[in-house]
Length: 626
Image (cartoon, rainbow, N blue to C red; front, side, top):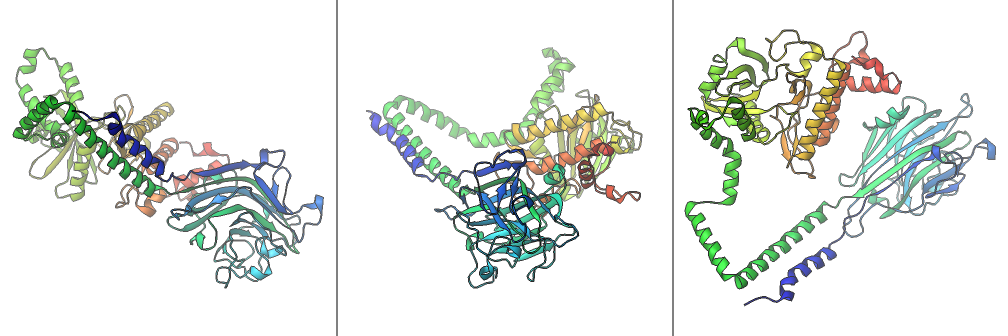
């Protein structure tokens, strides 16, 4: 008996056909222009009205080609940009960053009117009579704004420099929806028309339907620091715009004059396709199931004798109550316990009879992973947790120095405070996560114990030189009694500490079977071994995340000063938030300052990150060095 080749191939052909029928995910759309490096007008940029290119984009006339009053011009990308998927109707999310300059030819005279980033139907059309306060966006008949009966299909972010009757002030940022009367504005505290280079970022979240605007002045450091929006507004852009739009810049002058220049522009957009991805995997799963069923049928018809043998094996497994998945789970949860049984056998003379020496036993222990300890062994190792063995006190318990005679190993034993619910949760997370990890820059978990009246004990390899923070700010070293002096770290040591911590994060984020998000990276959790090599510890707040998955919202956890801003706002910890924390620690190592500390002599030093950014912007970064 058998099955034809055509029948066997049918599910494979079905799989290919279904994959071809699935909608393909929308590709990201992006472009970048540095106009200051171009000698001629770059391809892909179209000009309208008085706009032209001379070393960079000039949106209004300058003195060389005529009067600079009553001028209007636009420059826009010459291809339409998708704003919405025509099939799924999902909105695009986009982010655009650009640098511009507005300069008043005569600082003593009035100047105006400003420039704007806009989205409009493609291709862009410069309205007649749109100079002056209309910024080349609207004419006098369509200036009413979003509340008007028939708003124009245009959305803009304006950087306005002249107070017209509908404006709140001379210098302000505004969001225009269908008209020049802004739906939202924020006053800018300094002049926008003094010729300084401005850096702006406009971002739109298509799922949250939220538009944000960030603005700063200065050099490249200011451009890189565009993280805090100065203006945000909830809006569904599809209420004002078509599926594909023109994106670009517009500017105008009226009776007052000024020059408007765009120096740099980058733009990127994408449409979320997570639901299509889910559909794809569902279809793949169903097709895979179909393939399995067909393959099982082929085996049944072609290999009767093999089937009988497999059934016999299955009966034996059933009689023993064996289940592959259950066994795997038992191994994960109880693997260290199994090793404990082997260890108990080894407590006698078995290893001696087999020719094991102490070194071989230690190597066997390292390869086998953490183990369960008896409470009596840990109490003996720490002289019943005496104060003279205490290395330090944390939020959820104390840490003691101990020596395990059985293993010939110096250890640090963390004793979770009795009655601490959070401490117990962190204990469970630590055992579950760090017991699976092996890396030379992670503190090794030797074992654990929770057999004694609510005591939860974690056993680590001892770090003789304590934590990094004690070397930066003083305090006890690891092997010294708490309160003793810890030597400062030399610059080569600090460099190696930063490299070691970065190596540990790379392993956790990229090289583990599941991504491990630590969530509490700070100097007190970075330990130093006998050679001052850095080892990251304390995985009580860590989370396991599938590679490529989005972070989930959780209860805010971590230490203030090290939390990424988006973590505080959304509660979502991610690899990126870990990297932010690493950046703060790197600054601490270099500067010898905590993330936040009072400085009565110089209040600007109170917050480490802004202070370092400020020095970087002044090209005085070395002043921050410890």
